[in-house]
Image (cartoon, rainbow, N blue to C red; front, side, top):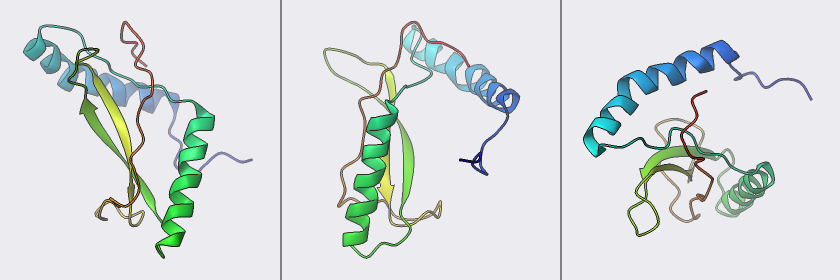
Length: 118
């Protein structure tokens, strides 16, 4: 398999994450007086299964080119108040497309502790 066209360099990824840490994470830490999650890890098999589920369910709805949007989120329960992300199917790959609320979102990755910068 060849490298996907939307891959970025390791240095670009480091720069992007560094920008987030210096412009977002610092404010999150100040507001909550604590360090927060800055990455979430998902099992590849689970992601492939979810992508297959989104493709299959979208096809049943007549959606030919679905997308998946990543939302930043936070827990608020007795186990955690830390950041997370979840994946939400969309009605197309266009960034302005509507969410597809007929297909359940995907969550429950691992946030590792303490937070690890890229």
